[in-house]
Image (cartoon, rainbow over all chains, first blue to last red; front, side):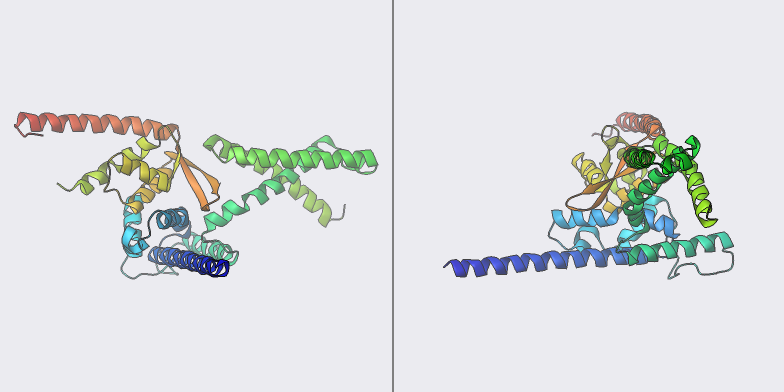
Amino acid sequence: MSTVSGASAAAASAETSDAASSRADEISAYLREVRAALADLDPGVRDGLLDDLPAHLTEVAGADTAPLRHSLGSPGTFAAELRAAAGLAPAAGGDGPRTGHAGVSSGELTREYVGRLANGLARACGYDTTAEFREAFRPVWWFVRGAGIGLFLVIIGGWVSAAWYNPAGRVVLVLLFAVSEVVSIRLGRVWQRTDVGRQTAVIVNVICVVPMFYAALAVLTNR
Amino acid sequence: MDATQLLKGVLDVAVLAVLKNDDGYGYDVLRRLRSAGLDDVGDASVYGTLRRLYAAGALTTYVVPSDEGPHRKYYALNKAGHDQLARSAKVWRSFASTMDVLLTEQGVSA
């Protein structure tokens, strides 16, 4: 009896897993088709529009067992509604991404290619959009900035040579960098929530790039 | 009269209004609008509107990781958003009041 119920449970579990996998495939396919319908947009604009979509499709699929096409309409209709509501021009009939057409400035072309490169990198790393990739990568930048803050303090304090050549000085340097990392990561989490916070982050980031550049130069010139 | 056409003109103010007191992510905003009685509002219209308001500088965003799936992007009104909401609400109330008076004067029953 227990063997039979165990087998039933396993079968039910496999069925649930298949259903979840099929739903995930449906979400991916829908997302892909919406993206294709927005292929003519600037990559940055397109990513911005699609940024929320994976989470939304997951919510819709979780709330209703009906196919996404039934709940949301076709991907083409969804994309057209998205464009209209976002105040963007309707898709030109069948035009693909802009590739060196007359009238397209070199700046636009550069943005197009940089955008494609960023998209390719994001997808190669398993992310659906550049924005999603950027969000995931952000803590790494906070960490790097922490090192920058540490370097900045070391350079400003003129402690580099003095501290490094005695054991206590090294401990102080390690502690200084550890505190800088904690401060940078905690501030990163707070700053990303407001306009003023993001503007402050830009100023601090610029200040931190200078000592990193200085340190890189010192390493390269073997000083 | 098709409510969808009317909705297009006032979706901005409706979205700003449901975000006035509580930040929300896209699906959350959609649910708030529908539970307020705007049943015809489309999913893509809400996302497009959020994006446009964000691009216009009326909203800020922040990302909150979710245990149940992809991260959620929360939208919040900033000062420009609050100002826009106040202006739009004034225009809407004046317009609705004018229409109400016009219909009443012409003897059109509710």
